Amino acid sequence: MMEVKTIDKADERRDFPRGHLEVLHLTGLDFAVATFEPGWHWTESLGPLAGTESCEVQHNGFVVQGRMGLRMNDGAECEIGPGDVFVCPPGHDAWVVGDEQVILYDFAGPMAQEYGRAKQG
Image (cartoon, rainbow, N blue to C red; front, side):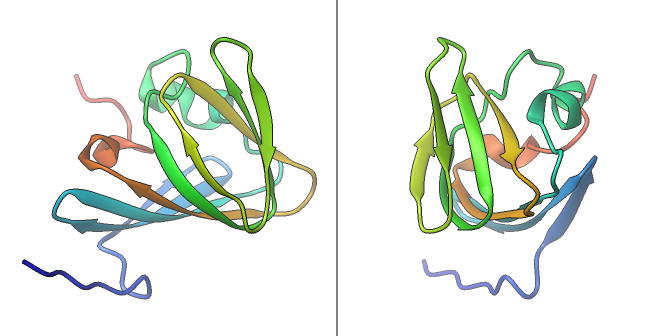
């Protein structure tokens, strides 16, 4: 089965402090255009929504604009920027580096369906 959607017509928009996601749902894949404003930090913006100490979603992405810092729970750190393709496993923190908005494309499996939403229950 083939599915084709355009990012110009997202299935949903998820707003959170200092950022938002425009999400497309396809069979076995959630694709999101993520926008993070300067000052965004996962711990402050999405941590309270997720109810976890760190992000527990795997991200497979491509950075379009801006720079982002990533830190794994074990302390390993890196910085990603325009043109970088990355895989970041569950158990990490992230933040915008500098004063430029970060825009990235995130190709995630169905596990990411709740990313950026308040935890239920």
